[in-house]
Amino acid sequence: MTIRPFVGSTETTLLATNANGLIVLGTTGGDVSITFSAATTTDLEPGRYAYDFVFDSGSVVTRLLEGKFIVVAGVTV
Image (cartoon, rainbow, N blue to C red; front, side, top):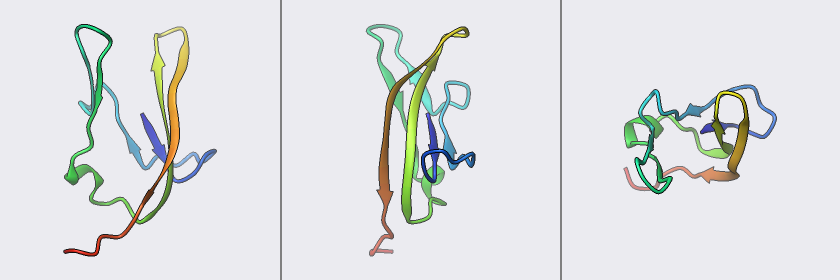
């Protein structure tokens, strides 16, 4: 899963992969867990972001999910 500041950006804000442990593939049923800890997201600046989640079989890359989200500044410290 790649998170970028906007669609078409070449800058990667966050990257979740099976290799870095942020994506965990289930052993049955095709379950996938994507987890970003507070430590991972602490440096996210308030603003709009775009993401996509792709599956790379080695010969074919398939986009499974895409979207946008907004990070707002916290009020409580």
